[in-house]
Image (tube, rainbow, N blue to C red):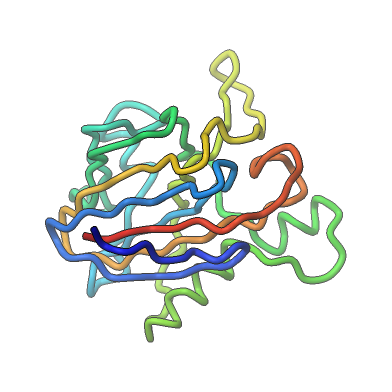
Length: 198
């Protein structure tokens, strides 16, 4: 079995996947949200799009068998397995400097927006667009069809979600550093996560 690759706590990483390969993203400690992006390789202007995917699959949380599409409405990844409770988020933008300022943070705070840019740069790539991420394992209940809240993940350690690549793609991951609201558990402790490509 292919070895796991680390997504360091509070940081981001990127990798390439080829059409037909399988990606598994692992919630190693059970409470860590992973912001996740996918881009057409080599055209990073075409990216996995949450708004286009919601229209395509007719739901706000993708499940096994659902295919996520790009901003050109082309298939990019299909969910082929999910050992978690299946609770993920497609609504919330990646955290950024401005989000933490609004929450009262003074000074710099690690954030998923910077993590995406840094992860792509480590592959020698430049960010062209910044799409909304697929927030893996993130629990954002929608109440009465209107209101949302930020809740701890419902996962257990080792839960994972798997995808089949429908095109050659660049993948990016951020072990979300949000420690001011309880999306990474009620204790707000940030952990690492892992992924595997096979």
